[in-house]
Amino acid sequence: MKVFDGHCDTLLRCYQQGGGFWESPGHLDLNRMGKLGHCAQFFAVFGSPDETPGRPLWEVFLAQEAIFRREMAANAGLVIHCRTAQEAEAAWAAGKQAAFLSVEGAELLDCDLQKLEEAYRMGVRAVNLTWNYENALSGSNDESPEKGLTEQGKAFVKRMQELGMLVDVSHVSDPGFWDVMELARKPVFASHSNSRAMCPHKRNLTDEQFTAIIKNHGVAGFNMAAEFVAEREPTIDTVVAHIEHWLGLGGGKNVSLGGDWDGIDEMPKGITGFQDLEALAERLLQMNYPEQQVDDLFYNNLMRVVREVCTM
Image (cartoon, rainbow, N blue to C red; front, side, top):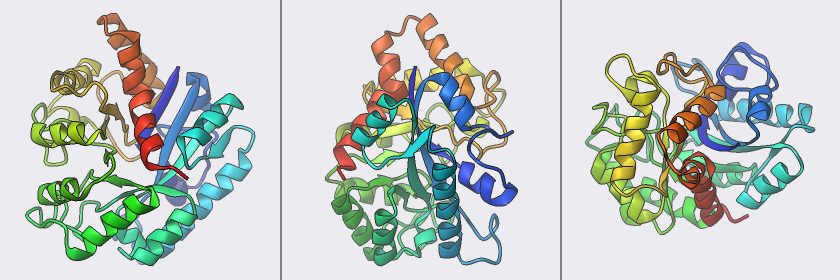
């Protein structure tokens, strides 16, 4: 099978606990990716005052980017750092997995345009405008949720789209989301956000927001964090219910995967890591979803957006 997943925190796991990409006790590794088939994965650089205390976040970015480069070199026979859809498909043709690099929270780049461009040169192709804290660009879903994009934030979004980087709206405040949609001239990316109508968590997307993503030709990646799937005892079928809800809104070309692997503590019953995406695909096929729809959800939709936005 083919899989393109929009978000994991495996770099943070390596940064905090050591280890590498080949095999780990966490949710995702190259061994499991290889067993599924052809996989592409966005690896997020992440840090916060709580997770990485006492160190400037730009230094955390540089340290995790160095881990990413180290793991690409150490596993060069298995995986390639990709910047475009064409590079990912070339990696698959060579029998390797495709690794993309993202940043979860523009504060890791000091919300600075020059550092944004430096990150782009280093191969970063997606950036969350915020994590859970507000920053110089916008309020977040958790802190200053009433605050939209600042002028600095608007300039950041415009420059990202000029460069060919995915603007990631997961974690941003609701007003910030709508400011992004007003500015967007290319598809946007909610890398790891679910349906708020199905689970009323503030990190999830409203139906109006998801409909805006449809109109923008963007994608929303389904998050496997149990608290974003249901308020109690979610299962694979609860995951399917979220997907069905979005498909019912006309999002057949706009739902993707964003498991939040290695960044979450609890998952729906029946899912323990990346390898269980196979069980999710099998469940959808058992429910008589067309194979084409499953392929769209699992890799075509996100690949299309990367192809349209990340052109070089």
